[in-house]
Image (cartoon, rainbow, N blue to C red; front, side):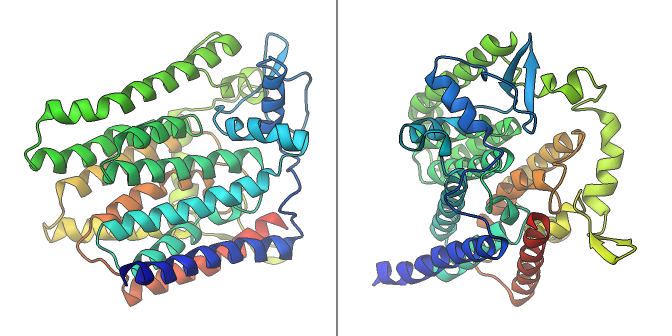
Length: 395
């Protein structure tokens, strides 16, 4: 009986998620199986097959790093790993959009699983998983296999798996997925200490010794360090530095005078990505701001997290683990605000997708294991706005 109660909401969740993406792709004329023209990761995988870390030639419409006269992929390498194996089947025509769709579906399933384990009913877990992920800047990313979208959706999926596995007491795969997520989005490194604290705290309170827990974590920690060493090695053979993934060698930063990360960017980014309204007035009337607006309007679950934290703080009912989640969220947000573009052409604030797991970790640890009418109304309005934004951005 329990399995049947779980199966129906989970099935509806996955069907709704799949339908939401496929319907939008159909309306936009996007093929699920055609490769994206921004297939940077496929080109990198094909170069690997030929024993090279660099591409054979420049591809002008892609963001490629130029170093010592060679052209390199300017993004962390993990998304190329699954693509590598698929090139043996599809060659240069890997359906990268299909890969992004699968990453999104896995994400909603894993989030449902985490919330269900934390005491949410199967229906409540399904509702929150669907709305938290798709009433956000994530939705437009699921419609295309473009290089930027692959990295963010895969990075999100891996962090959610890491959180779910560590919460389930399966630290090896949790730590491996965490390490792999850093190879998609380097600032995801911030999740590591937080997830370990959230995992270790309850177990230490349960009288298990620190030495016992360390031995449980050791295989995963070693695997994570090995993955980190591989990143360092790959960066070193390409750019001469184990910490350089390639963005600093993009022409806009290496010889056109731009600065990738700087305190000078913070003021503009705060104005645009925390407080800016979604629409601007043009000669044709109100138009969606396609170079960014408030991340809280584009990602209402983040706004709700701020409200939850403030309400709990005022009533002095906030827990230490919730405080830690919010502090890590603020640190991560500040680091993103240092970036020159915060995502460029986008719906809302594309980099805010990296912040979504904080809201989900906070949600999983609050006392109310349901969704209120007010919360549902906010999230459904956000979903409608995200659908509109997805269609507008991709037209």
